[in-house]
Image 1 (cartoon, one colour):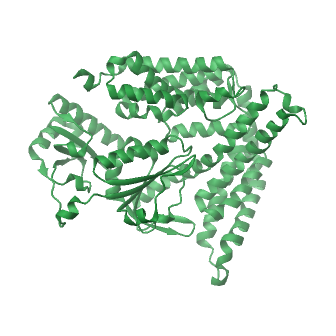
Image 2 (spheres, helix red, strand yellow; image 1 turned 180 degrees about the vertical axis):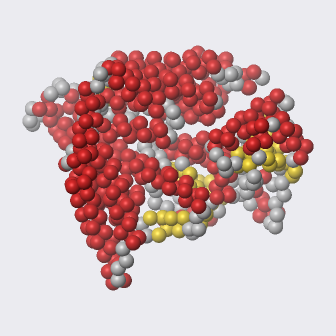
Length: 563
């Protein structure tokens, strides 16, 4: 009997995963097979207390049970599922409505706009097509908006799904049923997120410069509050990255003429240094602060955020001061937008005169008299410590950053380590960024290598996935390992974390420097961007081989291979 298990438990992801994993093991022993295609399933087991609303369930044999029973007594749970399942019937609808496919439009966007944006879009399209839904996904990546959704398509849509880790303008969806999630969740738990979207989507109402959900429930509000600060920070980072990439590579190009050639006025090396260090990197902190504030308060937060970021640079507070300035400016501007009430005749002046002026003054004064000097002292200490740390401390820091990069493959922990490394580039500290990028390449490269050296343990689809992971790994896209991690997290993640930690530690031990925050091994095409090159490649190779061997040894043979 082909069986599909759906997690609809609201008590936590860990418990739902444990229940599903326990049931799969028990059911396999009883000769049951599993499918990820709802249309192909003969029995649908739902872990939770409610059945997701989906036209594709109609006519299917379903059984709903609690996660506690699935964990404690999986055999009993499976027996009940076989004997007590019932055919799911649609209520109070016509046959024509029952067969009508759901029409979905979606948006995906991640901080770098390179991997998660497009992988999440593909995952949503694939899962929706399996269910017979109509879907169009708009990608907001680093190269701009792709597959743009039209007003007509929005009007015809039954549901809007926004899988974004950064702030996106949702004004066009006002009045539509909308569900928000992250790109990571849309990629790793696609079926569950689509089920949740049917149940939890709410009418969205755009208000002023910010968009809020109308009639939102408390659980959803709490979820948004937890994601808020991280999303605002990642919005700032996403706009800052082009500055850092361009600036870092221009500095690297100036070093081609000699490590101190830029000190000679009028030379090309000096011009490249002026473009990269004097202009592009000088803008990174103001842009970071400006777009954090923009994410919080919309356009009214942009000016005070940019000014606060410039003051962070001039006071020596660096990227830490820029982050503080961005949040200060954003929340001050948001407070004035919502709490400052003026006569109707002066309301038009609020967004273009009063709020930018007051928020800029408040942010500027706080940065100068309160935040600037203490944070500048912290940045000075941090920079000095990083540049003068002993070998032991460097190795420990590299191992921590490397392990973080491999913990959740582009998730919050990964992005926290990445943002730390990028921020240090403004302080001319290039070692941590080298460790971070080297470690970030390890998971996908190791998954490819594992499919090569332990070929017999992987089925054909996994071996094909390994080839794709190789390309993504070379480009420093850690997300290339996600298909493997999602399928076997208990074995993949520890292997990757160990390999990433070793790579990061080796990178810091050898004092490797990296000028650009992205690009993977293709940065080698820019002379001077990575130094020294051979030890850098060696560190990546050691971590990749270590991860591949460990995972290859502990991995169980795929059921397809065994069959």
